[in-house]
Length: 333
Image 1 (cartoon, rainbow, N blue to C red):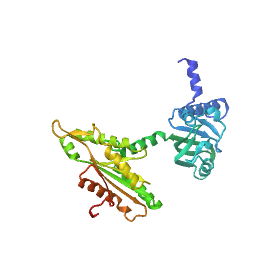
Image 2: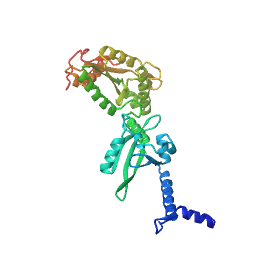
Image 3: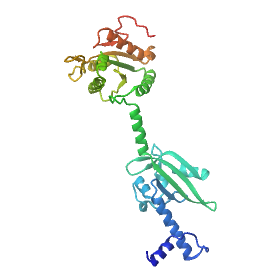
Image 4: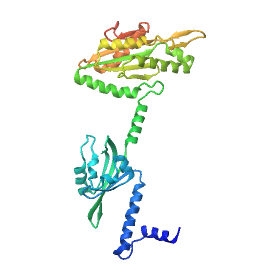
């Protein structure tokens, strides 16, 4: 590096302010410090906005440009706070300014940035900067939450999904059942449960765990293929599945149950019990449909499970409705 270049760099970023705060040397110092700060802010991954106390933009880094979908030069001089929104797409400008006048510093755990195509969820820290007690700038640092939200949703999806079959699991069912139960109570609408239990599955599973797992997966796939896209099949555990149906009465629930029962009649759903012997997989199905004003609604899960056990008692590979198909009174407790 030559002498002139070293001198030029030294003049661009003086390490310390000159003794006299007047003249070209001090002006170069201020300009150098300003350029240095902008370069530092430009390397920050989070979006950074620098504004006048009224919100008028003076600087934003590359991350902010990418977040807002516009260049810094096209927005300089405009009110950057107008891009801060609520989930309902309402401006936060007045609210931010009012809170800054009182608190001087605020944290927005969830807000949104309006870019040309969408609302982007952000976490924002907004602070008023003072010199000699006078507000001179607003600095907003924003973190894009899209990746965090997508990651959290994926973790939640995995937590509510049965890993073997890809069906919903008990955690998801318990949550959805409570919502469906509350809906039925409030509206008086139909609520139906269809319990499916694979017949003689223990013989297949005891013979070979791999065979058992393969049959479980094949059975789940066969059932999902005959269900409507909106129907969510749940594997409660082992070889037991359940279907939660809201707004569907006994007749329609029985039609769905029949589709489930007959979907097992496929060559791929067989297992070897003894050498050179194949056994077809079948299922016993129990159905209970009740209206929201039915006093038995709180016991609908028990009633549907009774229906399933009654189907097994009648010889398996059939559908029973409890208590309508009840041949003998089976106590609930």
